[in-house]
Image 1 (cartoon, rainbow, N blue to C red):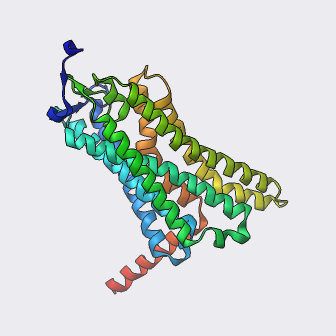
Image 2: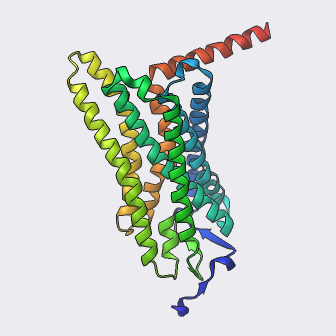
Length: 318
């Protein structure tokens, strides 16, 4: 193993992020695409948080969870997108060891937290539709805060374990990461350590993170569909399915991309990078669009906010 050339993690100064293996002239196109998507993420998620915090009518558990979802989407995309855009113009494409650790930790923290939060939102949707009379009692402010805090706590614990396991490995002399950010799979490919324990712990973490959240989501929606089918009015069924179909669509994109990325053989690295885009940039961009365009309360709050600002500007000019 020594002939491969290893370097201890404490001696590592930086890594090289390969990014997308395309012709140099396409780097400008990719940069503009990333810039557009990231701008939409910033505007959409910041706008969603501002609307939820400033409109009293949105002071409900559903929008409390949605505001936290926007916060998470904003921050974990910000962990990835700016560095990726810088590297489109950089010749070295380097990231420091500390920067790689930070990026890995924060991304793992927010992506796991989002998984738990989506399960919480599915449970909230289940209570709202299946037990509407008990909704305000069961989904109390205290419980909502505890559920969100628990999601962040689970994300933090998972991230600490994953980060400490990954960056205590020894890496080969080649520091080239075949990805556009510091992720587990590409880092393992340049490690010269035995990976049995790492893979065992990673499998255990995936089992206690992904399985429970998916079970909560599937069971919740089974009850939701069952309840919706019992509604006699077509309008009632339509409203029920409309309320949760957007949530289900977002989860499908997120979990589908994660499963493809981590549970399939890494035969085509470039395809894995495209799959990574689905949950690093596409999902954070889609969430505020889907929840705002398909939600009457959010659209009404946005309309009133814009009208208020317009009239204020008119009076100021006058």
